[in-house]
Amino acid sequence: MLMTRTEIIEKLKDIIISADSRTAERADSVTEDTNIMQDLGFTSIGMLYIAIAIEEVFSIRFDNVGISDFVTVRNIVDYIEGKLQ
Image 1 (tube, rainbow, N blue to C red):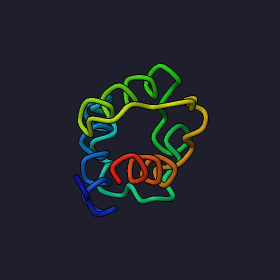
Image 2 (image 1 turned 90 degrees about the horizontal axis):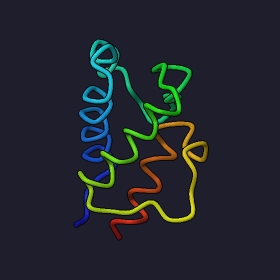
Image 3 (image 1 turned 120 degrees about the horizontal axis):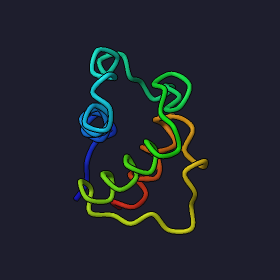
Image 4 (image 1 turned 45 degrees about the horizontal axis):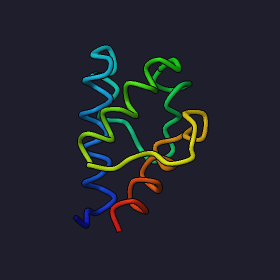
């Protein structure tokens, strides 16, 4: 299932909003350079929720990576893109 980076980011925005509704007003400004923890205020627990949701939405599994490996949206998009190929 090939998706464009833009499509992946749009799905990530939905996941981010569902993980914490307080991020809804900032979701439109999410770019590949957005820092998940600093810019959006997610904790490691929130990041775990995001990881689980990503696995479900994109039908992928995170292999040999930790939550701290994903600092920016770009890191997540790169990983998802690699898994979808």
